[in-house]
Length: 399
Image (cartoon, rainbow, N blue to C red; front, top):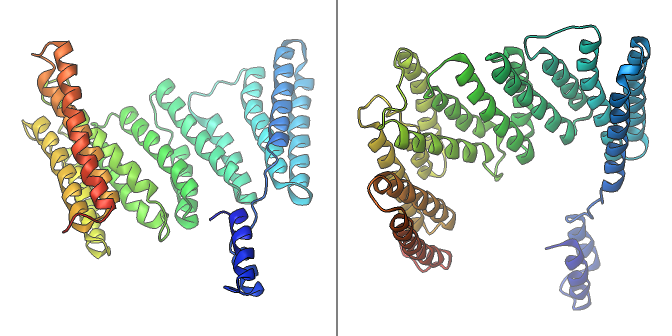
């Protein structure tokens, strides 16, 4: 219930002597008024900062090096000091915006200084230094925008390193894992988990591709994220990292369905021995954690992490795992009358059915007929599953 509705309803409750005035005040204290964030001031500060940077960039070539450095350092200090004072004495939101502008100027200053003195970096070192500045601001203020800035900068720097130099920058990775990962686990906040999970998956992909490891090493990295969720998600909180992990490994199985059986991907096996050692440690830990959980059905997710790439018919096994996974969540949801599990199984089954139909019928069926029949099948399956889901939501399905 919103605070406005509670104020109105509780006043009537007091008049009807359902609750006392003291009880009404206690209820209202549980629903504090939301503070309206000065978004206009925030965007005004950002646009002023961007306008300042654009003006400097357009006139950069006619300014001497000494004045260039003076402009960079002076504007950096001005925005930071103004932001810190505003943050402490007036508006936190506006102060954060000013310090974010200072962070932008700091990053631009790194690249402009390198350009002035002809310094060329053959790594993601500039992004690493920039990320340290963002992380330091987060340590000082403990505000979400600085956490997001650090997550974005470390991830962008890692992508830049992988695309430009074909290398994974280890120090940026350590800053992300040890620094942001620590506060993600300690804070147990959903917004931290979202940004950390997204950044982790992107950096994992960069690590595997740039280091020359076979694609299946992603399974271990994703399984680690799945286990990390137990530390990062608070009790009763949304399991963001587990959701990211399940979706990611689901996509890996889809990748195997389409490519392993066609010979497009030559699976490298020279490092598979070490892969299986790491996988066994993580998988046993996940099984033990699942057995200790109050909900014993989450072992179903672990089916997706089974490594089947070593088999000659890995594409068929991958498709079979997807079907088994979907049906197990559906049947468990029906038996336990849990609508969330039914929704999960329904989405997975629809996706798997479409993948199987596409894989089996695309090569030999007329294209128009392919889409027409596929649409009818998906429509019929969706209608049946939606009917069952509504029955579960209404409690009409008996275990």
